[in-house]
Amino acid sequence: MGAYDGIGHHEDVLFCFQQLRMENVIPDGVTFVHVLSAYSTNQKQTLKIESKSIKEHRDKREDFNKSPNNRI
Image (cartoon, rainbow, N blue to C red; front, side, top):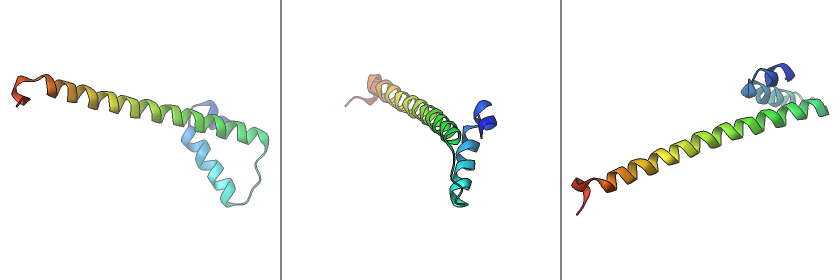
């Protein structure tokens, strides 16, 4: 998991952790560090994507509202 985390394969870290849990393996502290790192990075990427989508939607709405053809 450390190797996956080191090369940015955060989804693989989370998948391996899920596999450990399903097999009732108790992870050590190092494992948790990699899992937290992967989860944190994944959340940041998700937030960036969501923020970008919201901004694009807002920009499109503003453009729509500025168009004279869309006024009543």
